[in-house]
Every structure is written in structure tokens, then in C-alpha cells.
Image (cartoon, rainbow, N blue to C red; front, side, top):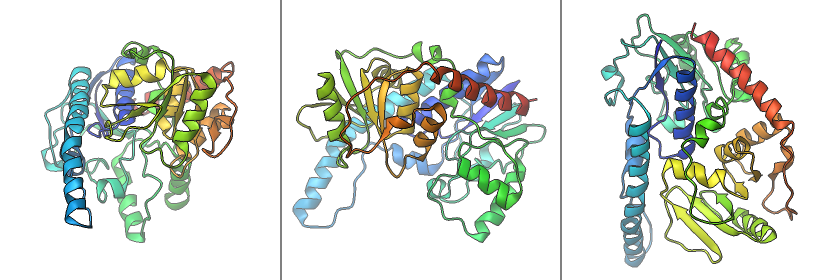
Length: 362
């Protein structure tokens, strides 16, 4: 079959791009021809600008400082965006770019896989994006979702639910990634849909091993988070001191602020990003995909509990690794992870999710 993938591949987010890569590899290993549908919605394209000026209230001096900081950051942002584009162009067969539903031509596909990611989120998509909801002409093309998500911070009105009920009819098969959404579809729309794992957990580790680039640094503890002011950075410092390792703070865009005793790294390629996880002595993070890649590479890690941590918490609970979800305020003595049983549980999750995909494509 010729299969198209529709997801957030243009997001400047390592997890988003790598889940898309994992989906492509999964479908390719099943014997399908796979193409990435190059949808470029305006709300992602605006995030891909190198120069981003934040509006700051205050004195003329404050506004000038903000403008200078934005100019200095533009070089770092441009480098990161170029790295993402290079990976997309080298790793995928892409359709021609399009920006709106009317320009979409899927007549050459046998099936289209929607997801994974928050493709149904009104807050991210500024409403219900009919492209991601499959509300486009698709004669004889099979539509299915894989691990679709509506996100955890959307307040849905009665009108939203009415619209959803109509849009859900676009798909031949539906699967979701969060138990809360699964329950909502059952209670509100009387739909029984399966829960499947993130695409990064669908593939064998060697899919990522093949492209991971080893960093130049020696033994290190890896910290991956957007911000470190909530105590998580201090927690990571504590772990690095216990292991007598350098602490590396991996950022999407390398920031302008230096932190004593911490090496900040940013703007790395997707392959280098994977390498930092694969070769870390220990990982400390606030990210679901950081937890996922720590598990994939069988690393010692700690996942900091936060308001955005539901997905990581659920994954660790499934794998029997609940003790690796910690508060940044805890005084933790480092311990290694016994991965003896984790592999078997992960394999069972992978098997059931692959089975959904195989059945949905028939």
C-alpha cells in the first residue's frame, strides 16, 4: 500500500519529529510505501521564524534590551530550524507543500495515517483544523488515526462536541493516546476506541541506534527541559554531583543565559539529540519523549513530576517504573534501574499497538 502520514512534522520539537520518523519506519517495515504529507499550517509556520520579538511593557531601555536579545537569539533559532529541515528532507519522502485543505491531493494514496500528536487540539490548531480531522475529499482512501490526542487543557463547549461528533465520522478507524480521551469518546459518543502507545515505542531500538550520533563530551548527566527555575535544574545538579559527572543542559534553542557548573547545549541535529540520550550516564527531564527515549536506550533516569507530566506518569506506571517519577524538591539518592521486566512489558505494549495498525490498514 501507499500510505501518507499527517502529523505535526513541522513543529520545532524533537519528540514530534521523532514520533513521525518512528511511524514511517514502522509502516515501512510492514512493507508499505510511505510518504509524509507536507502540510504547513500557518500556526506552525509562524513559530518557525528566526526573529521572534516578545512584547515587553516597561521603559524604553527594557524594550531595547528585549529587541537586542531577540536579535541575538535569531542566530540560534535559525540554526535549529535548519537542523530540523535537514532531517525532514533527508529522512522522508515528502509531498509538495500545501497550506490549506483545498490544496490537498491525496488521490495517489491507499491510506492516510493521522497522528500521533495533539492533532485534535483546538488550542494548538486555533480551532478544529479540518485537515487533521480528515474533513477533506478522500474517495477510496482509507483514513485512520494513530494515537491521536486532543491535549489536556482544552475546554470543550457543547458546540465543540457537536462538531467533533460530525468530524469523527471522517475516519475508518480511530485510536488515541490518552486514557482520558478514550473515556470521553466512550461516555459522550458511545465509541469504543483502542489506546495505543507513542510511535517511538513501536519500533525496535536499532531504528534509533542507526542514526544516533555520539556527543564529544565524556561521561555526563543529561538535563532536558525548557526551564530550570522550578527546582528541576537543582535536582539535576544533585544527581550529577552524586555521579561525579558533568551536567549538560540540552535545549531546543541554545539560550543566552549561562549557568555556573552547567554546560548548555542547543540547536543540535535530531541525530545528535538522540546521541545525547543514548550515551548519557543518567537523564533528568520534564518531557514525555525524554522519558520514552531513556527507556528505549535503557538509561538510568528521573522524570520530574509537573503539570504537563500525565503522559510520562502513565507510561512509567505501565512499565512498572513509577518510582522514577519524582518531585524536584525530593532529596533523592541515585539508584540504578533494573530493566529485567521492563522489556517484556514494553514488547507487549508494542505488539498490541502494532496489531491495531495492521488491522486498521486492512
